[in-house]
Length: 192
Length: 192
Image (cartoon, rainbow over all chains, first blue to last red; front, side, top):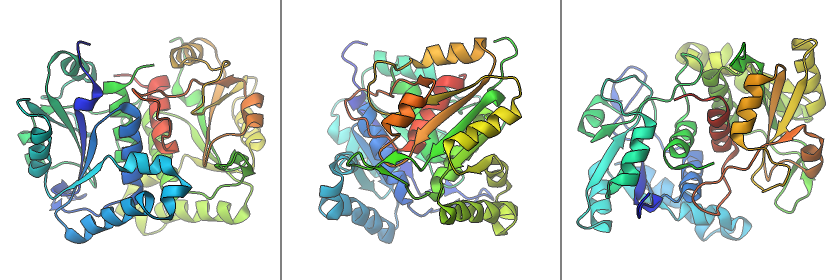
């Protein structure tokens, strides 16, 4: 594993641009439990930060309000473990500014983006290959997760890599973004 | 894998008896997104049913209301994929009645219960061993997940097996039950 560490891995939860059920590009609303579940996952697997990405200022304010409830408010003393996790959340207005910030945090390093989604794609990279790549190639990795009906074709096309969809034993492929994030982090960074 | 199929696997989401943060036994409230996330996971991995277990009749009514919104209400036409998943949910007033129902569904089969939790335990079985066991020994398996601060010692002690806790790269072990369920199902039933 060389000097590799999961601290070079970042998560992005995209609320715009994402697709609605008709394939149109929308900005989705922030879901409270996404913030908790993804930050607790990131904390468990040693991921450095979770970028919650939305251009909507009222949604950014909502994210700040949720975090501050657990950082400074009643929740901070009631459940400090939530604060530890939510400390990993960063707000960004778009994917590019999240990538810029990661570049600043990792000077002279390559930042690679990895799009995720439920659809099959000929470009898709198997999980074990990404795992090997992270262990053998230095640089930062940003795993991009879509809310609503998933990432747009443009975001997919602009990503350095595309991760294979999660397959269970059936053809049903409608996991929540919280469940998908858990399985992806465990497959890529987990150790039994 | 013999004739093994994930259809002999069941999930239970326990709301009583579970622990609160002081270790006291409580009945927790049902969380809407738990129903969605766990049923979508079950549908993806081919699990037969998700038992939502609570003795509180108002909470049972809430579960029925959520399901019916997506089965018969506006949600049924808006998003039929949610209905497909929520069809897997069964309500039980306690763990014993869920086990009884699984016995009825699997006559002459052994029903084994597997407790899950975040704490280390000398009795804990590694994930790959459970995977092998399911593939080689016929019978039904019920994976029991606790809400709130997890399963009580009594539920742990009464289970046939105890699954190893999920470890990431850190000592932080406070995953949501939704994330834990996702990782457990993928480790036990997943295939890349």
